[in-house]
Length: 97
Image (cartoon, rainbow, N blue to C red; front, top):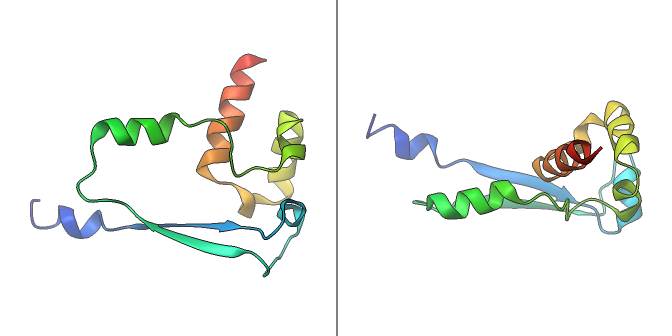
């Protein structure tokens, strides 16, 4: 396990950021930026917990954040727009309802 673990933990995270917020609603958009992030090795438990606790939905447009139920409807039509930040945000908003 010691030999395999380092090779399987070198996973990159990709996400797409539209050039402008309103382009988030396009089915296809090539004007934005694809961002790749390599996780730090080793990474402390405290840092991982802080990242997992972020529920502000910083990469979601303002219009989406005004209507949490609308975001769920939006994801049914645009499932490729699901991301971890958005799921944490919607989870925290639904707990408040």
